[in-house]
Image (cartoon, rainbow, N blue to C red; front, top):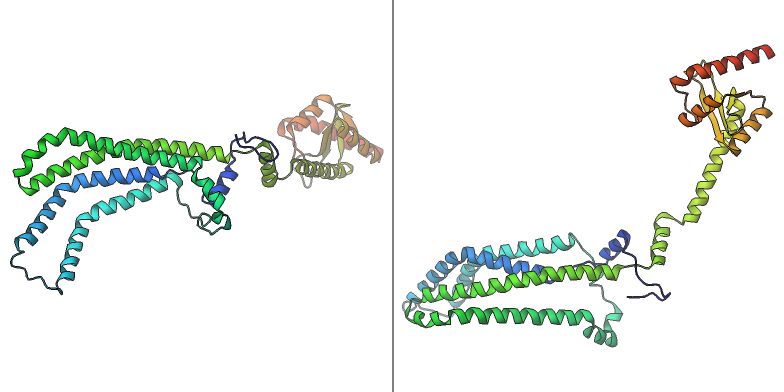
Length: 356
């Protein structure tokens, strides 16, 4: 397992950001064998489906030129014309196959990496001129793996070709007296089956190679625990700093809430653990509103501020608990608490009038 200079092992799966950064540099999980195998299979299948038409057209063209060879007066000036006509005919015959090959190559690459454009891989770098590094790459695991894959493909194609030729060799000699087109069709079929069987095996190897390339890429992208922490800090910010900011924000919110306590009409308590400050203006509000609430030390501070500003404290444990649990800050009380709160408000307002 690769290790960092700090000695930490890369044991953590790569984050989406690390994979995205690698993608920007053109570093993705990709098998070069998969598009090659797909192109070979698509080309062979297209050739098979159009082979009769191609052979017939080729035979007609060949027959035309060979049949009129004795009457043709070939001059130096006509050679380019004949060449162009021959290339045009060949292009028309091969156009369907070339189109399928081109589209298949695009689809196979897109299926692996999607739309990807990066100049990182083609940007000239001085370290690429390092002879020692170049020699090391020649004997790297990747180079050895590529060599093994190439040898395996050559061996497979050779074995399949040998097996197929061995099966049909006895049928070749009787064909020597047949028409050229018959021999051509027979040899074409033999060649097709050789390449098709080889292509199917190569396709299986390509799928295995893609799985290996993806595993190797994910292993290379793995991160140390410290790298994961550092990336989290860069992406989300330092947790300690974020915690400090949240603490400051909560303190500011508490201060704003405490500044509303002197404006309240009553503070309802339970009596020691909870405190809820209510305000009601019949001309501007449809129902009393909770302007401050808290538990523990915050409740104690609310009661202290209320006492300092001559705000009545009313002990009502069930009502205090209901208000604390069901009503958010700066929200009106719900209808189910109207009656209980109205009784408290009536008591407070009557007390104020008597005091006045």
